[in-house]
Every structure is written in C-alpha cells, then in structure tokens.
Image 1 (cartoon, rainbow, N blue to C red):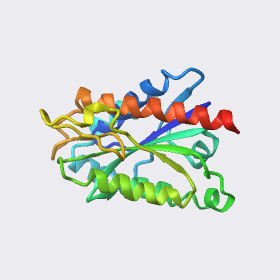
Image 2 (image 1 turned 90 degrees about the vertical axis):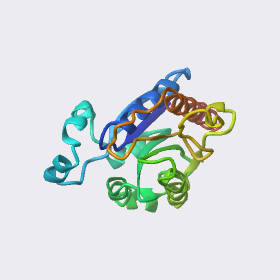
Image 3 (image 1 turned 135 degrees about the vertical axis):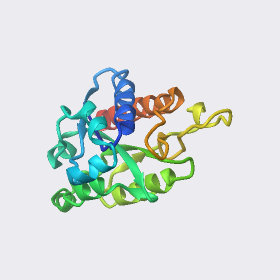
Image 4 (image 1 turned 180 degrees about the vertical axis):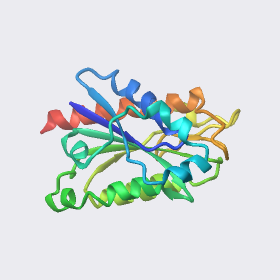
Length: 205
C-alpha cells in the first residue's frame, strides 16, 4: 500500500507537517510512504528577496513530484500553503498538468488528505482546503478530513491550526512561527487516518 505525501513549502512549515503526516502513515501496518516536493516556479531573485533560499535548503534533496507519483499511489496527502485564500501557484501549476489523469479517470476513488498553512489565524486555511477539495472532486477523489475525534483542534488556550477540512498551521507574516506540537499532532492523526482508510478501500477491491 503506497502513500505519497506531496508538499510545497517556502520556509519549511509544510515540510514539517509532511514529515509529521508521514509518521502517522507509518503507524499503519503495510503502509509504504514517500515525501515528494512540488517544483518551485518562482525565480531565484524573488526567493532571495523573500528570504526563502536558505530555508529551502532543508528539503532541497527531496525528489520533485510528477504525475506518475499521483497515479502510482494508493493514497495521497497534499501539503498546500495558502496564498490569499487559495492554493499556492506552485500547486495550481502542478495540478494543471493532470489533464491526462483526468481523461483516463486514473484518480477516481483514490483517497486524499489535505493540509495547509497561512501567515495568520484567519488567513485562508479553510478556504484553501475547501476549494482544493472541490477541485480534486473533479478527479473523483475521496477527500479525507480531520474529524473532531482529533481533540487538538478544539482548544482555545493557544494559537492552533486544524479544522474538519484538514490539519494546518500558522506560520507568521515572516515565516517565524514553526508548527506547534498540536499542529504536528493533527498532521500525524490525519496521516494515520488516511492510511487506515486507504487500507480499507484497497482490501475491498
């Protein structure tokens, strides 16, 4: 049972969430997981101006994802940072390349879990997760959320990401806030849940 975890990250937040999700996946017997990164589309000078070049070195050795990584997987996890209430342009560019998969119906009934991040608490995480889920339904994919059985999203005692639509984290305006342990726990929970549901669907075929 193959679970591929695809992420885009500017400062490393979604990379940390992807690694946590992989930990959850690996708790499920029979699950094989890989982390892959979405190709960068911004020019180097823009990344330098945004102070992202050094941060991106932490995952520079992670292989880039391609359409074959969507097709081969039994289940998928997408780490999608928010840009103005929607998916980042890098993710949009990547998914725009999936037309042949759509024509063939390759992704129909394939489970997928979504995670996100934003600079602020109300910076569009939920709209990004909802709109991305709607897009993936055009592929016939089965979106696996983060139910309230993950109690970590219920608290109000600290800044915390997470919603029924997926795990998430708040990065800060300059990317200065790293994912909290509660945010990472949500990613682990969702990763494990995605793998468990994938296993059930695979055994039912």
